Image (cartoon, rainbow, N blue to C red; front, side, top):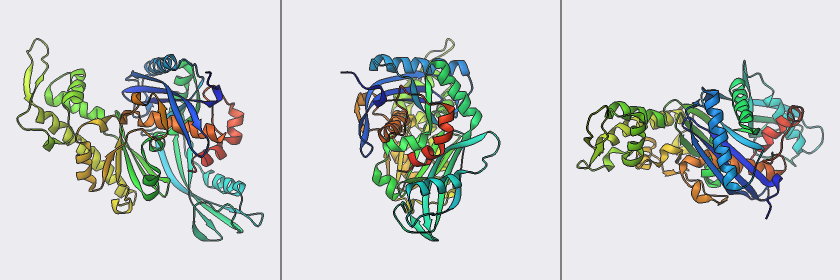
Length: 418
């Protein structure tokens, strides 16, 4: 059976430690769409640091390898991908717009106009709009409307959450993808993508915090009333845990990664004091023995610091966990370490669970059912939603810069309006 090209979706998550590529078939319709995973590719890389390309050739190599592997498994070639964006170059602000209502009834076109007014702000040098997410509307001065289409009014106001990104960072990533042999259909904020993969509709609605423990950075996102309310990128992440193990255990980077994956734990009290592990020797020295609790202590200290920074970010944004009854969902590669739930619960004093990609996915689900695939599966689900709505890019499609200039603003706010 041949899969129609326009119903395919492809995603690339270029992280600090690896590039993940997914190819899938869009299933369902705009109200209930999903992705049947057809191909998966993963390639380790050192070319990206905190969302910024540091080694152009190395990143290109890793993207090409991951995508070719995914195409080989899927048995399909694609041309267009959805690509994640995160890191130190992402900025955000709340903006307000006002527009008059020419008719007696508010229409979708009026929402588009007032959102475009709110989005039409200066982002400063080398910054451009990535997403515009409407938070609330006012009709004739009365607040509290999530969707005022069909209501009567003369004055329409919008509060819109604007997310911008460094233009040069996106341009570099676009060139990498194109040199590797594909085209970027759309860039998507990684915490927004991950939320589609690991957060339930109830968690987004009643309020929750998403903590994505990546390799190069930790992304924090707050959701409430179904919308992204705040996002931030923290400096500490999984690579810092590895670095601490290198210095604390006097082992190589490769050995530290192996020890972390095999014997690591994020919560020191859960490791028995009597348990001993063997550390590899080096430079002619024989292997050594060390308490496993030492490994857990090193990991516990660094991950606690990271989670405390995430908790501080929630408070700095003006939220308390009492107002976010959905609790904390931890995802990302480092979320797989034993004890992450216990440690996060201690720090946030709130309900905690690990976010595994699940809802809306079929096909090779066993290949992506770990927290490390939260962003890549989320990108695929985001793309699937846009394709199902008729406003996205099929994996074989391309768009011209002229078309993007005309439809880009409406596409940005409308596609995020969920």
